[in-house]
Image (tube, rainbow, N blue to C red):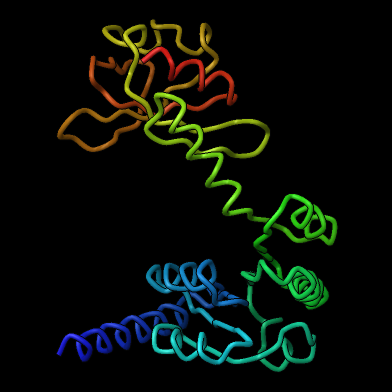
Length: 240
């Protein structure tokens, strides 16, 4: 019975994704490589209502994922003709989830660029691999293991509750509000001028997150979200 219900949920999710894709034709993505990274990504995209084509050379992986995806195929995308036959050139986004086979990753990324897919994401297993993909012209390069390692390191060694780094040496951090930021409106606390960070959100115990403004008064025990240069948010979080 549990297996039957699981299959029903998968079919319903697949049907909803197809209906959503028909009403929003630009929300189609090809995920090439259905290992741990690719399968997790494909499932999440399906959950969000995207039309997902999952591709892999391993028929076992494709079979395992086929019921949960809009479309799936066993194919070798290092051949540009295969990509064309699958219609990937008509998709607005494609993800190269292959990491261990660097040669295949680079060839597939090159084929996608030649096919002029508007948004190409690719997984890299090292900075060198990522640099090659960037030089090819891949629009977005992801180093999941490296980025997760950096994130966890910040959480382990500091007082942060969460840490997200983005371009230009900036980060978004969740931390317990330090005493220097409590008791007065944020506009008067001079957090930005003294510490180089901006408080963008606040959460009180038992309440949801809300946007912060210059009039917001942070209270002791509040959790806040701040953004700024990495060294600035790290120093500010240590004040907690």
